[in-house]
Length: 165
Length: 232
Image 1 (cartoon, rainbow over the protein chains, first blue to last red):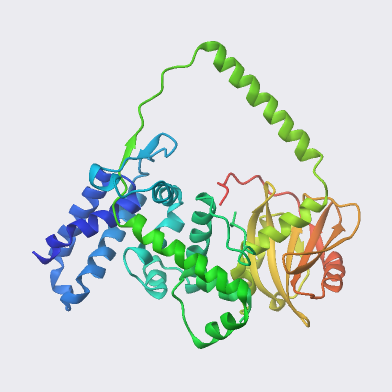
Image 2 (cartoon, rainbow over the protein chains, first blue to last red):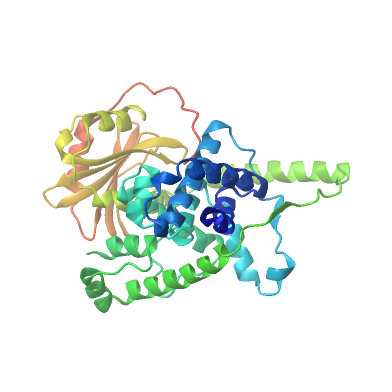
């Protein structure tokens, strides 16, 4: 029941990783099944969200490694807001959402884990088996790429950095 | 803490805090502006990620008439030819600019302080067809980086004046020594055999001695087989 109540959160997280709703639903289904089988490993219910998000991420990674996922060509795809969100969505937000989807997985994954999942840099490093410096660099580059993809001019005095190749 | 260190932290996590960071921010207007910019971006990011992406594949467009395809093909050929001409005629100083841009894109390279294993150094050099008779305990960073269509060794060596970045450019010929200052770095590109070596230091660092020393120590190995690898 606790796990099931988190399904919308998990699905949103999986969708930002997989960029495909049906694949994300499969991932979440499999993750919930795994979580249920090993529910005894969860000692603290307050940690359930982070635990489940970790399982979802691993399930996505497993799927990604097992078979090369059919890639969504973003030039032919559009982010269609549903009627509930269209009223609130403005052009800048849609541009940013599109830019996030265009980020390579190496950058998108730690960013989504940090912003949406609430993971710390150290936790991301542990989970992705990277050094702390490597995670810092990926997050830094992800934000600069988003800034550039969205065509945002750097603030005066803050223009020193260039987007990494 | 330098501006570079701080921006890496803020760019990675705009809510980073700490006494050293705050002290730097009090005296650096540029970094304060950078933090504000990253915090604004982060707030937008939270809003953007709040709803799941909803991707629909756009309906295929109606096929264009055949003449339009020929016109498009001709346009592509002309544009490619123009790009090749521009590339061949590019001024030498763009090489310095691109070297600086590349080094700025790897800020973590300056942070390394541990010696790199001989195996990693060997890999970074040999995969680019480069040999270097330099004591490995001076090298604190070694990567094989994609630069202008080739993999090149990107090293950071410890010198008596601090760390210096070295890019060994087997495929870039320069006619003469080129000293430059750009992006808060001092650099020099010197001819070396059939290629060149770029050396950069932060601030007003010493690069000429390092470049001269490396010219004596670098040698070209037989060109490795082309590696079919995606551009990172």
